[in-house]
Image (cartoon, rainbow, N blue to C red; front, side, top):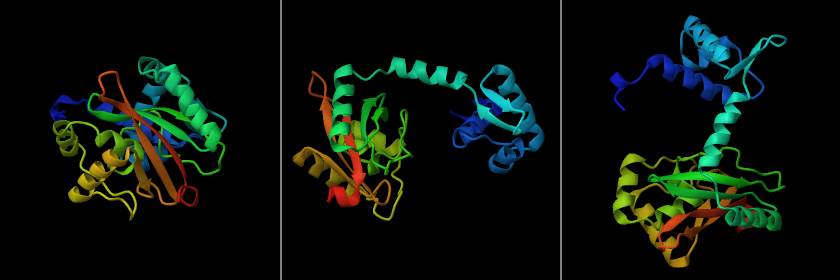
Length: 230
């Protein structure tokens, strides 16, 4: 969207919410101002507005601000509108329980790869940077790799143009020829592999999920430590 059509104060307020989400123990307005580069006085006005609207709460004892439960309401509404089928949820949970590793379900929706469900494993190693609603860096994680391998060439080219591949680790394969080779291999063997491309020390395997028209619906993946996956 062109900058002339955006509301700057609203964009700044949302930026502050994003920063607060990364600091669950709370933040000060001075910290928000320093990190966001938003003037301190403007941060005070924005935070007062967010507190008044109920999306942020102030801990007067510790003098910090945290997100309120009203954020959870928004999250729950999104979750309800993008429900993963119960059968698929049970499959993801069973995979997680049997392997003791975290499993993920993503859906190809509105030309995006969107993580819609996570079944946590009981292993100490977890991919904390992936969460429900995440839809970035699909070229370097197993969910994205296997979905992108099964969409049409037209949809793939459109996705590539709007989401230029970005390297996350030294092992990320993001060159055009590498990506095209990966798509071909993934389709032929029936599953995708992320070998430390998303996060060093972590590997992931993903399989496609198809709908009744035999088009790719999404993917199921499970992560683990490199030594386990090898």
